[in-house]
Structure formats: C-alpha cells, structure tokens
Amino acid sequence: MDEKQLQILCEQLSIELFGKPFNHIARFNNRLRTTGGRYLLRTHDIEVNPKYLHEQGIEAVIEILKHELCHYHLHIEGKGYRHKDKDFKQLLEKVGGPRYCKPLSTVKRKKQLIKYIYECKECKQIYKRKRKMDISRYVCGICRGRLLLKN
Image (tube, rainbow, N blue to C red; front, top):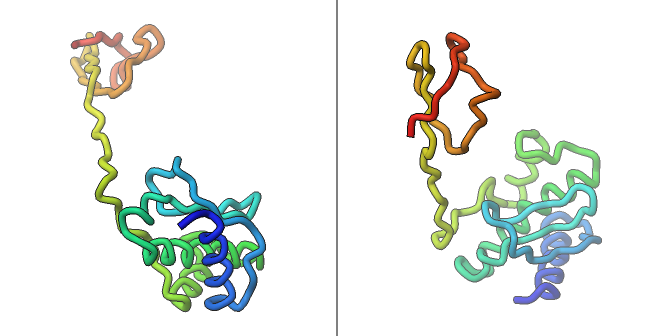
C-alpha cells in the first residue's frame, strides 16, 4: 500500500462510517515509534505508522484510521476530540474503533539503566540517576548537604 491508496482508504472510511468527507491528507510517517497514528490539530492531517501495515496488515491500518478519523471529525465540529472526552468515547464506540492499537512485536523498548549514584555527605541519602548532574548546583533534598558522585 502506498500513500495514494492510504488517502483513498481514509476518504472511503470517512464517508462510510461518518457520512462526512475527509478533506485533508493521510500519509505514512516512518518516524512514529510509540503510536499507531496521530491526528495533527493544526493541519488536520492524519499520519499512520507504516510498521503496523507491515507487521499486522491492512486491518490494523483500518482500525488506526477509524480512531484518528474520530479525532478529526470531532475537532472539525468543535466537539470533545481528546481521549478523555465523552464525545470521543461515544463516537469511537459507534464506529467500532479501538481505544488503543496493539503493540508492535518488532519494537523493543530500551530499559534505561541507572548510570550515576550520588550520596549526600551529611545524611548519606542515596540518589540514583540516569543522567549526570552538576553537583556544584544541587544539594540534598533532605538536609541540604553536599552531594558526591559515588560510582
């Protein structure tokens, strides 16, 4: 499936499920990592993660488009388009769209390890951090004592 076919599919789903046209652009975005798709508020365009097409097939893309079209039509109408809004939940249920998409099996999330351990000179409080911090600018949150890099 290319972007032209994605655009046609999005327009068809919009007419069939919502009874309204989709007048903007639907495209694939390779940079999406943690989501199946997104609706862009400023441009009203819809972006889809192409990894879902390759791994889970056209059905997954259809489900993603249903979800994003709910955001699209509600936002255009000035109704509650966010996940927490009642309007969004009702429309999503009406068209049979999923609240969340299934996670990709090929994407493995990196677990960040604790690289830096700081200790307070005074009270011996331990601070575990993923990033290095400037100990000349920070003090202990408990006793205001100086910190030492323990590694």
